[in-house]
Image (tube, rainbow, N blue to C red):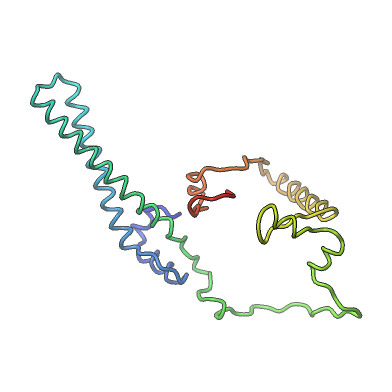
Length: 208
């Protein structure tokens, strides 16, 4: 998620990047909400400062009544701020990262072939696809994967597990030589943590 300060300072760049991605996000509305949000925050903070200053002294009955009215005003402003922030953060999360200058613009129809290397192999037999090979060698189980986790999931089995572990160990050996600190993280993460790292949770999830 882009920092709102960056969006304020680079409004046109952000708008162009959104357009280049073929997306639609109302940056003007976001910045308008940002201005209202900052004004409400200032209003709440100023009200609290006045209330704190007055509470340090012994107030008269008239001042007590004014402080009660001020407290009600602060509560109303806080609610207005809270309601505004729901949509504000929802809109902010929709703003994508800006595109690097070297990234080609356009969709699939605009691609350029940079290089073709090698030739397609020829076999004296009918070649099998990777799915057929794995099923025949008892390396994968699609049915159990779908039953447990849903469509497009699978269990890997037998020597394919060994191959996967070998690749992981190889990666660990290489990265450790370069000073990488190994960690095993918790299996679950809170939505605010995921938002902070740019994951952008899409509402209530069952498999976060």
